[in-house]
Amino acid sequence: MLAMAACASNPGVIKTGPNSYMVSRQGKTGLTGIAGLRAKAMGDANTYCAKEGKQAQMTDTSQSSGVPIFGNFPRADISFKCVTE
Image (cartoon, rainbow, N blue to C red; front, side, top):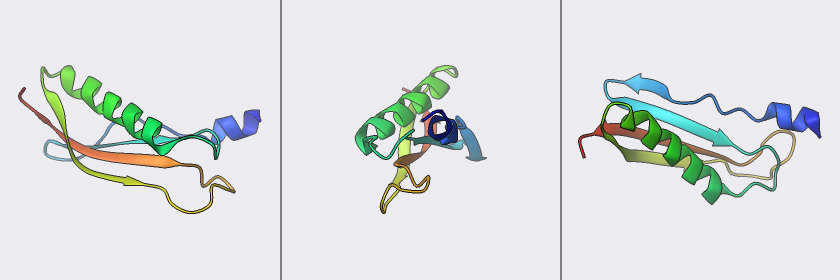
């Protein structure tokens, strides 16, 4: 079980261009819900933008698909930009 938990990766916010960012959240098991992962990723985006006194605005979202085996655990990706509130 510990080895499975170590496989989950949440690298944090990644800059993808001028005022463009991406954040991913992956479950630690195949039983993790996508909606919860998406909410956590959006929370990460909001926290990141709040440091600049701004608010996150989602520009795109994607999620994993397929059977959650062999490390293909549920994953949610959020692309966003920081905008003035």
